[in-house]
Length: 389
Ligand SMILES: CN(C)Cc1n[nH]c2ccc(-c3ccc(F)cc3OCCn3ccnc3)cc12
Image (cartoon, rainbow, N blue to C red; front, side, top):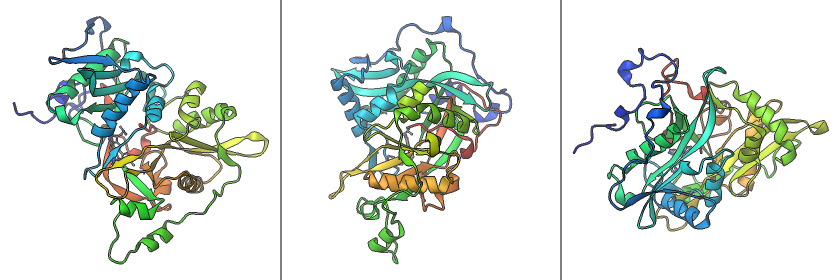
């Protein structure tokens, strides 16, 4: 039957337009643990639920291939995210992870659907609202079985598995608009390898532009400028944790990190996450920058199979000017082989996007909170203090 727009989302505890003023800030529905369904939702014939063990090479390969072939594409279907296995292990095996929150659907041992949750403690609009919840990501249904209404079942099943743990909220992002975004952020791109961006069709040349002029325009120094800038090491964890937690208090939506979590999310991992600290005299760390590695597969290009993209993660500048710190991030990313450096207009990113010659992207990334009414309906991008990969 014809699907009314957002037929599924109208059934979920998300504020809709006409009840916006009635709801008071906080949970929209109070969950009752005893009422949570104990058994998994029904699946259509031959489909079965499957908890993915990402530490198992073969199962990790199955998730990797499902995403590589069926996950998010840009609006013109020219690029598709190509998350690596090591990246997925970083993103989905944080401290405190639950085995049944990596939810797969299989048909004849083949993975055809996936959705993930990780446990987070989110601060919403002030220190009082410290909410244990889940961060949902990687919702993906194989292209060949779309519109079997499998996505709503994946969402309902992971919601059930979160409810069983007595958690009643979720945070997630998406390029599409469904009921009801709490913030609509935009992404920006800074060219590092102008020639390749033109060859893959990411950038285009106007009449007066030439490749060599573009290369000159975006040229970067060989080495970073900030004295004391070096890759983060284990010994920096305590100072980075302090700097990060202090900085994030500036925002309306942010996580608080334990040292354990900082170790997981920020210690450098080859081809996954790069973090650099600024160390002054007596080993004092005053700033740090970080970016993650998320290539996109270039669909149908004769010359290139991938676009190497670095994505701004968390950057804290307490002594170094943020523009200088991020200029060094561009240089470091270029030297690590990236073609483009991406950033959202969240946190303090607006302060460097223009000056460092970022160009506006062609879409937006919407932030969502499940089962939570904010004081105001929307947050400005600069009030968002969380990055979802
Ligand atoms: C966040 N995380 C949930 C993945 C995700 N889902 N949906 C999305 C829509 C946009 C972005 C995004 C975020 C930052 C950015 F600089 C560029 C982006 O997309 C460019 C378009 N594109 C899509 C594939 N290859 C290129 C990420 C996502």
